[in-house]
Amino acid sequence: MVNPSVNPSVHPSVNLFDLSSRRILITGSNGGIGLSIAQGLAQHGAQVILNGRDAAKLEAAAQSLRQNGLEVETSRFDVTNETEVDTAIAELLETGPIDVLVNNAGIQRRVSLEQVTLETWNEVLTTNLTSAMLVSRPVARHMIARGQGKIINICSLMSGLGRATTGPYTAAKGGLKMLTQAMCADWAKHNLQINAIGPGYFETEMTAPLVADEKFNAWVCGRTPANRWGKPQELVGAAVFLASNASNFVNGQILYVDGGMFAVL
Image (cartoon, rainbow, N blue to C red):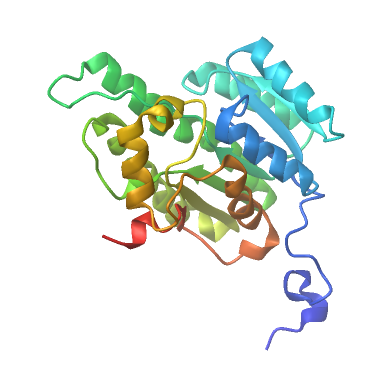
């Protein structure tokens, strides 16, 4: 039997969801789901590092959080550029550890597979899948050396289900699911926990045209047992759980946050 007095993660008086000692890097976090997750993690005590390619948009996002008294850093780099990634991660590690990495950066290009160009295919795969490897690799080396760390990959319903005109995205998010499991296979023995969140249909800047489409909106609401779209802030609980000590023996899993869509026909 574990003695809780020598294991803080199971001691009843310890807040397992406390993030006050965690420095967390969230890629693609100057807007949308990434910014909502960053805000939620910061509100739970984390020191968050926002990332994006657009310096002006990144600083505006940071200021929006700082105005609410939250602790925020920024790191401008392109997650698809290996040189930029390695340089940025090295610079961040000079000022302190990265306790948690959230691989959130992603794009969607809706096109039927017989019409997709190689350029578009590569753009989606590189941004949604390869970038997670590029950013995780140097961060994981640092975490392995420290003997602890957490990586959260933002997957999708499309990690397990397909839909017309989402071929490149589905392939990328399916690959990200398997990358999550591969990271677990390689790194769990070093006390790293690598898991994923699988959002369903959420109202964001990227999905605004779909929300406005009466037919598509009716399909989403009818297909989702909760009968509505998700709000970005509703992903925060899953992110806090996977970033905290509460998930210390959870590894290689996808936590779907989708109003029940993945559970029913």
